[in-house]
Length: 169
Figure 1 (cartoon, rainbow, N blue to C red):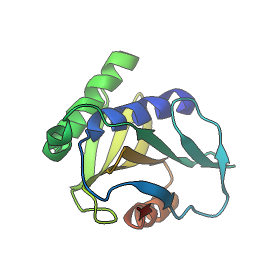
Figure 2 (cartoon, helix red, strand yellow; figure 1 turned 90 degrees about the horizontal axis):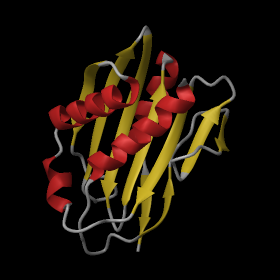
Figure 3 (cartoon, rainbow, N blue to C red; figure 1 turned 30 degrees about the vertical axis):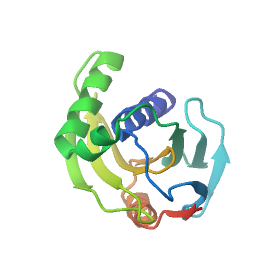
Figure 4 (cartoon, helix red, strand yellow; figure 1 turned 45 degrees about the vertical axis):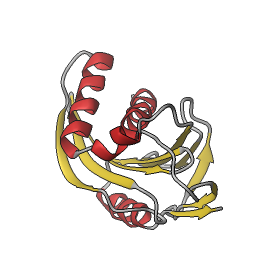
């Protein structure tokens, strides 16, 4: 089930990301702190994915080219819009509504670039997963998604999401 959920959540993150031009926003590299035991794995629908052997969580990155003048859409994202988009996509894919509870939403910049961070708990058919989405509006949209159902790992994910580093040219 996790393999079906994770690409959907990555796709939702990209849809919510938006885009638009900005000077000095060419990202040449990135760094995220991964908890011990995480290794890179292949996952369809994302550019990079790291998981731990116990499968209690994963981190993925989806990088998308910017299209048109959707910078306004990126700026307009709110927790309500993100929650409604995720719930709608979930219902379309799985046929029933999830229960989504916000943990936090912010528009704190990442590496000086426009960004938003949205964390929520999703409950569906007896399963609970917590996700942290960090979307950065640079030369491309860099969308990081941290997903787990483990409370200890969630604390490490929160710290990692706050410390995403980008090298900008």
